[in-house]
Each structure stands twice: as C-alpha cells, then as structure tokens.
Length: 181
Image 1: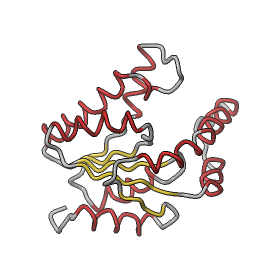
Image 2: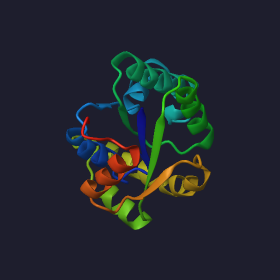
Image 3: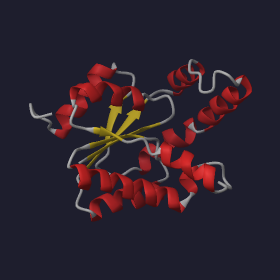
C-alpha cells in the first residue's frame, strides 16, 4: 500500500509522516523530492518545477511501485502534488500495478501556512536563497488550496491544524492498520 500525504507547503506533511514512522515501523518513507533533486543535477528544468518533467513523474511512480513490490512493505509519501493531470498520471501507475493507495490532503488556512513557512529555514547559510524558497512556497499556496477541488474523489481531507498525534491517529484508523504495524 502507498499512503500519499499531500497538501500545501507548510501544511505538515513531513511532520505527520515523522509522527507515523515510529507508530508504523513497518512502513518505508519515500520523498519524491529527492528524485527531483537528482534530475536537476542532470537536466535543465525549464519551468523551475521538477514536477513538470514527465521523467520525474514516471520515476516517482516507478520507484514507489518498486519499493512496494520489492520490500512488501507499505510506503509513506509526503509530497505536494496538486496538478490533477500529474496526480492522475502517478496514481494510475499505482493502480495499474495493483497497489492500494490512500491519499490524504492536509487543509490549512493561508494565514497558518504563511506563518509556518516564515518560521522555517530552508538554507540557513544562504539568507537570499532562503527568502527565494519562502517566496516560492508562498506563491504556491493559492494553487494548492484551489486544487483541493480537483483531487480524486477518494481523497481524504484532514484538518492540518490538528496536532501531529491526532492526525496520525486519523490516518492509521482510516487505513486500518492493526497491531501488526
């Protein structure tokens, strides 16, 4: 199974996965952003967003499927993915491989997202780059929030302002993990 934790930048995706990890030690954590970083070292990303690269989407799907098939373990994926075409492309690959996917989207108010983004340091040794990353994240809040209406109908929307513990409880209950976690 794949558990995709989605939401805007600053919504708490990684924090939720960090909370799930010790409570579900069988699960692997896979961050598709790493695939993007690798591709950026190899090819130009004309739009600045590696998700626009077809190869990124293909590799993200293939690696997730490979992790499930090779290791027979559930995979937790914390990643903002709001372009409905890209969601369809990646999630269809999971379904075609016969892998069950649970898709969660953390909804958080714009004000809280901005506050969380402002409170983060992305590149502490480079304040100018840090500010560019913050601006990039904030510029995507609107599209991320608007995309909630375009996500697959089986997407589970969660209040991203709940505590990580409460969110983890909701996710684990929803996916039906038992004592064999």
